[in-house]
Length: 235
Image 1 (cartoon, rainbow, N blue to C red):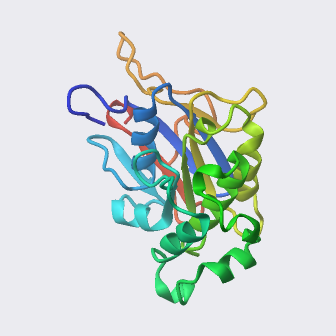
Image 2: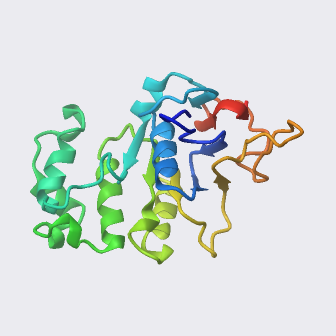
């Protein structure tokens, strides 16, 4: 993915499926955000391929995904109260799924009444993650959840990792969940990828991340509802 001067995102290959949480590590915030934007269909890669459930149309990917808490993109403004944030986010959900834009009923049903009057900047990291992911899932068509740098709010993975695992492995509504992170938690043994994992070596042999999500990813189909990203040299 090209930036103004240098590559914004180096060649990267990854795959995520419903019922799975994939953590993608990147040192730089701009790379984590660029990847999150590409995965959620908000930015089109300058090369390679990207698809969801076998469909390579960016619009289809965008409609199926939700981008959560991306710095400088859609992270909550600090001057907003939780109640106002809920009102604003619900207004983005198609009306046929939400009815009237009223924050109080939603806060009550989702058990966030106790934080309704707090400023978003006052929220503990764990509660922030619960709230923002719940809002992202207010749209019943969201099947792919993309969380940008959740570890920037807390040094403890316990403040965000259990929530994302819960959402990915929920039998009632299993999601494909991808989180871009600065570093992989020591306790994490699930699927991982690293930006730049498809950069060519000097001998032009593609370098692939040796995990289940990147080893020669097979084409996704409608039944598996998998997400596939291969940027530039990753093909």
